[in-house]
Image (cartoon, rainbow, N blue to C red; front, side):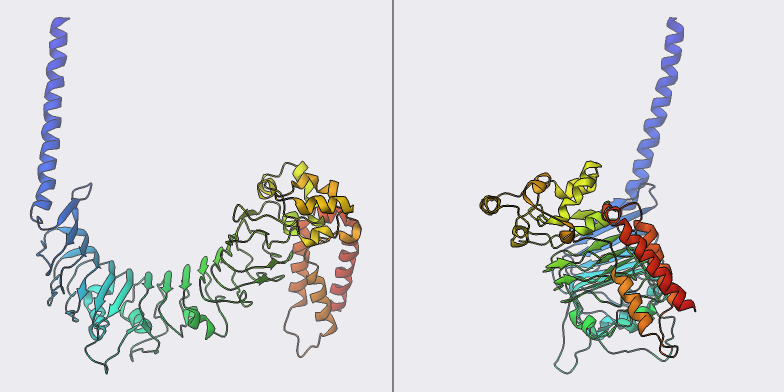
Length: 502
């Protein structure tokens, strides 16, 4: 037993020795990559094949090794105007090159030439001379660039006669493989400046375009047919000059943000078969009318935060059968602008709003009690803090004593107590059948139908109505209360379709 124990201990110690030696050699080998770059903070990759450098407080670009792959080089907080001569980065292999808090006034078209495998380039919080800023992207290194970020850039002009700015169209022509472009707080040129070699394929690879406060007044973004994300923030002049926001050609667009653009209403020409998320936050929208989003059938998430919204119509989300989440955070708003009827038609809709914002107490909320009995988690979450008493509420209070009592309340009324205070007959049933406006719309179309001026397909309209009917059948308590009305509506639609096809 003793011999066996020493035998096992010997091999264990040998194995441990080799393991320690291997780790030590690896550390020595990896440390050699950073030893030559002692002027900058250096971090090696896990596999030891590349390094990332953080170079702070330089007045010049330190020398880098051409034999090492640089995953990331960031030059930060330059003490003075940093000197970047011709081919400063020539023959270096760099995946990502970033400049931050630097005065880049000595750039020219050879400053970034001959860089190998450059895919990401970024300038942030820096100063440039605009007469050179556009020409630097003519360098051969940028022909492989896939991501460009320009944020908080200030122009330094030599005189009052030269006021050039970066031109977006020309920039996209210079960077043919660009996939992601972010421009923030950089004044762009509005001229359609394209060279004689430009073609309709400019920007065809672009998937992500973000423009924030670029002071633009024109942009033909519908030509970027492969866009998946389009973000236009704080560019009111740009949207004001667009006759339509045409996104119908963008078949792959999934996210659209139009924040802080002084929009007074929801653009009624939004049409997309692929859009899944729309952000209209921080605008001047005060009402959401019926069928505002009827051409965004794939929409799942809608942001309406920080708009002065007074009312959201009960039919506002008709045809949005995939809508899952609604954000309506509005500061200092104590009564929800959302029609209570929407909760009947879309009981699984997750509504996010300020915790102090509550629905208005009215007869339509009484219909929700049936859903509460069915233990619907989404409605319970929305109504758990009760509802707010308004002048509209007082119209349906049963007695004068109850009116006085409710007026003295300083806390919200629990939904379950509404039956005790409100008297609601059939005439006060505000919800009725959802999306009835589509019936009126179809009736108007039939009355005004003329073969030479007919622009809408009756077949598509009838299919659209049938789809609405099938999606809401058996789901809404309001529909079950109005079963006879629904039967009449179905017969009415069938008669109209018969007229159209005859």
